[in-house]
Image (tube, rainbow, N blue to C red; front, side, top):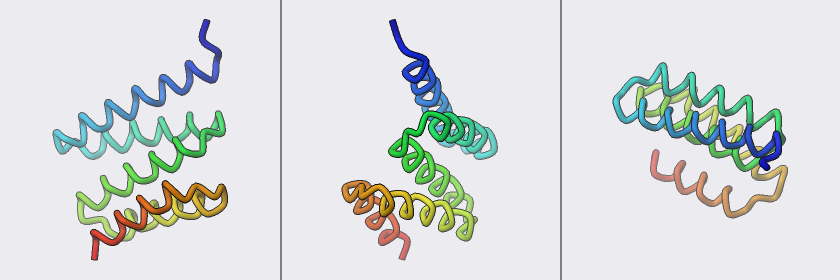
Length: 102
């Protein structure tokens, strides 16, 4: 039987998939809504890697809309978490993503 935390994580994962679908259809508002719901769930269960992943998806969505300030803010939040929790493998992916923006 799945624990409450596992069920919540599964719900967050589903919201991320829905967000990706909506983003691919250029429905950025719905995508961001799903991403933010997933973010709240990941934060409530202290799933740091999930939070970082969602921040990067939100950043990408903002960047796809040319909302660069919002996108960079989310990337900075993700980077701060990677530094705080010593998640070097995720930190390098985020820096790679930032490098592609220049």
